Length: 255
Image (cartoon, rainbow, N blue to C red; front, top):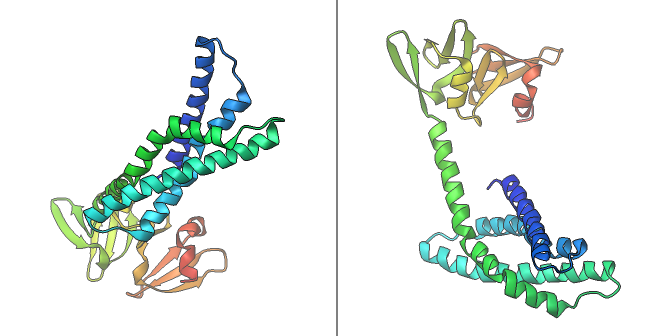
């Protein structure tokens, strides 16, 4: 899951809840206290760590069947909702004792949280496992679409299907790109950048502005004493590893 989006969304809800309290005080001509509303609405910010934690628990348990997923959703929805409300109330009372000369009562805040936020909290945690699974399934599908086991090399009127596992390296050979595989050298009429998007980034690494290598075919790496290295391939060919792309290939030095 993209937790950056979750963080921004919770912060947005936090601000929106404060604005709602402010507008309500104007329309009803009642007092508005910034400290109270900012403290009470930390309820929405607590979704940030709780969603991360529920995501962790879901992956640890990994319910397989649909029945188990439903039972897990029901159980986790109630448990995490209760924890959320209890921890929020505890934090509120703790801060209240530090801020106010006359702090709020635990029972009063707990009742308010249950009556005002329990419904949306239960719904959130009830459906969260299904949302997590859906988002990760979409992510996996996108990954499977974007990473190809075969690429089609185009040269003029020819179209040649190449197994990516057989590719040793790909190099710019202006105005073409040259694909070196186990048993052939093919000219391709698309850019290195376009080919890079089709290949698995866990296997194919950009080591130079004009070269991508298949790390599974690297047998040796030798320093040039200037920050650059030479990578020796299973074919005996040598590819220069530029220091400007070291963040891509640095792990190969240790693994």
